[in-house]
Image (cartoon, rainbow, N blue to C red; front, side):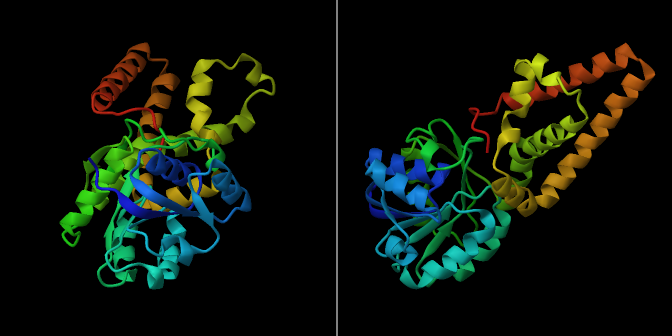
Length: 292
């Protein structure tokens, strides 16, 4: 049985924050779930659902919380911690859901009061939809949740955060923060970047091309509908890993273009076969389709 928190605070009631809040209350992981958000509509929706004590006061949300979960964009998490720090109880644990970990691991622990521990986390769950309106208590079921402890991470804090996300249905894996950023760059950030680039390139497509779009088009472009503010924040925060991976993709696109220019069917067949083989190797270790 997972040790229950008397109170948790979810700072940011979007899709992921709202889903974590709903799951924590529904599964009995927390007696009280407090949440904050910047949108009045999000707070109203949280109150309507009844299981989240939504407030505009960050101090009120974190006061007395044993676990504080940062669910805002990565670029605003440090400011959230600075504002929350004076109101955190001494033995609180802070975690987050940020898609990039190294900058957070380098910055957030130094902003915390003595006795408050930080454990970096990244639940690989999400959608191209945005907002608590789309939140659901089973969003993390079967999803990987990457925890990024360092030598300074207290073992008790790592254990409790791991148990928390496991109780929400996630599959916890551990990574060094920089390894996480490199791996997630390939598995999540670059696919989104390529989908955005392709969708933008559709400006050059024939005007009526959409009339013949099929499942392949819809599968490839679904994530290009993702939120612009959220994803510009993610891509910038992980720009080194994303840039390196994009260069590898450029090289492969160049090889594909050369085979097409040469009219070389054998080269094209080898290219596609090699792509399938590599994808199969990666897919053997892949979890569910959780987007982020």
